[in-house]
Image 1: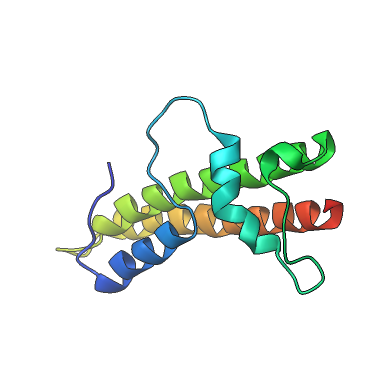
Image 2: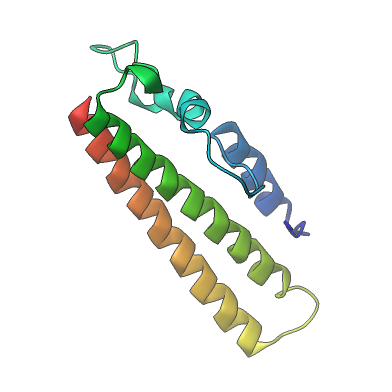
Length: 126
């Protein structure tokens, strides 16, 4: 469950992430083709305005795309954990809560960097 934040910047960030494919974990199998539809425009360039649909990618490209999308899902889950930890910061000063948030935030930021590296790998294969 996502904990709403009293910080409007955090809530604003949630709506921005949703525009780029964020979704809460609903369980079940991933629909890679559907997820690719949300993310494939990240790879459009002047020289390549049309990015192939997931089904049109070669097997190596599909694997790189799945890694990219998995990294996105990992970042989404870590972002949710970060939000939960941040919610614990409101109300009173608690050193342990600050440390928990710091750890969660660092894990999230590292996952975003991993997502960026996976993007570069997909880009190189397209």
